[in-house]
Length: 337
Ligand SMILES: Nc1ncnc2c1ncn2[C@@H]1O[C@H](COP(=O)(O)OP(=O)(O)OP(=O)(O)O)[C@@H](O)[C@H]1O
Image 1 (cartoon, rainbow, N blue to C red):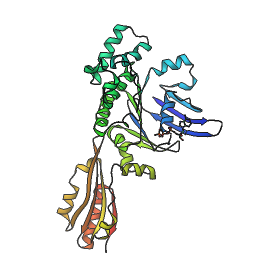
Image 2 (cartoon, helix red, strand yellow):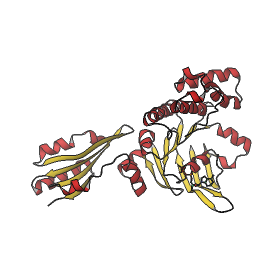
Image 3 (cartoon, protein in one colour):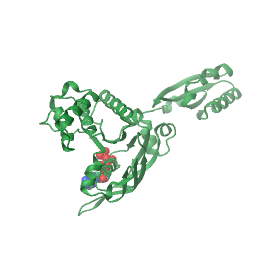
């Protein structure tokens, strides 16, 4: 439903040219939550702002439902933009308007009647859990409540796409969670396609189905979030994953071990099987768990264990071969002879 082809955004001034987006192509499916992660300056904002032409691309196509927005005139673009809602890190609410008026404004601009506006605003307030804040002003709201107003306003005209520009970056972790839950709910309830940019892997893990990693204006890795967590390829992607799944052992700990240290990843259904206890029943080896973690990524488990195996060399070898066969994912970190 969203198709970006060879998108380039160059910022030109008299002094120099800066490349914001450097030849990006991607496809986002209807109903998908698509994350774009990268460090500051990677080009995430430039890219997401090109999706509704808030930034005019220098070249390339931005197709929504097959229509290339870059070819539309002002009037047609205004109409097309009604299908695309957007929320921002700093909310951008009108401070002199109440919560009700902030949301109503988007509907008025789309030519709705006062009756239609009233029905829709109440519906939206209910959806975002703010029915009791209708007559409050933004200054009287918490950050999370302000973002809820932002979401209600963005959804006012029943868009098919919601663009989220670092929408939780100004919020504390528990408020972030509640806003992400709200986004998940509206994604499911309304079938809304969500594109979000973030610099936090925790946000991606929590909500995204697919992910693109951006660096220097380019997408350097893309795929299903689970696959990227299980098998990151690029060094930058590995850095982002490590911020959530830190599992490097201190060197000192490794040096003081006597057995063979192995790292096992359990992906998907195998994480729920009793591989480790089966191992100790079947082989005459001892195991000492040095690190263990199961993360749930979109409710699918991804387990990572680091274990020291001790026993007769042959038996340890057989035990390792057994785990390798069961998990297809084992790495010998250190073998102490
Ligand atoms: N309006 C602008 N004029 C000139 N250069 C710009 C403009 N906006 C962005 N850039 C440049 O484009 C590059 C990408 O910036 P962009 O804001 O898209 O990155 P980002 O990944 O969103 O970073 P951040 O998370 O810090 O916003 C940077 O080098 C930035 O300095």
